[in-house]
Length: 236
Image 1 (cartoon, rainbow, N blue to C red):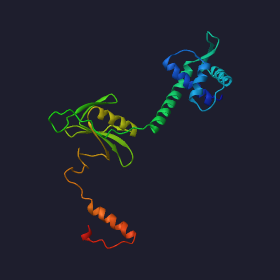
Image 2: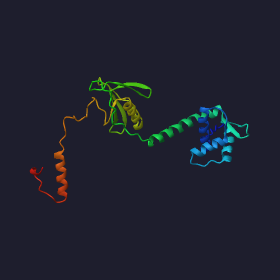
Image 3: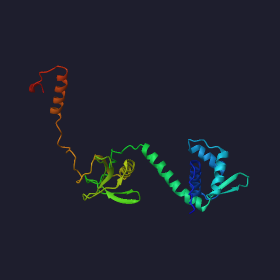
Image 4: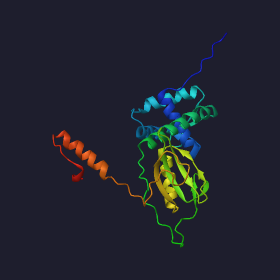
């Protein structure tokens, strides 16, 4: 029985196929190997030499992945065959996902926690406002950036009827959504874990927390470490 050998592209050939697939998606047609060489030099850490690139293209032509031809200026040019496009498409998709993951891992987003004051309508409560998140429209009066205890994140959208919607996303995506809410004039805030009522977890603004006792205990503990004792209730 004849053993079928499936050839896989080398690292250089993978890079060439990715470049050709990206260019083919924008403008189908032959691409000069000199142009491919320049693109690879700009985007890679591994040096690319013209003779190696052209030899690699000839091997890909033998494998049925490329057509080679001479451009009018006699430069060598190549284009993908149907088999080459089929092979290159998943390589391009994987590379785009990798680049996106790299960007998102280092992207910095400052959360807009200072709200835009809505237009005064005589009502102390802000009404629902429309906001578009990833081509979906929502009506909301508040958006919460939620960080769960397990590290996952979501956006918590409340409307004036007390109904909640929770679009799921990673930290950067939720930050983008929160910015959209802020720009739409919707109140925004940051919280730990999901809430099941609009004001759950909030400390009432009228009930001020007296920190005197806690502060005194902390001071007494630090003084005792220094060998100073004798603070009494009358000293408080």
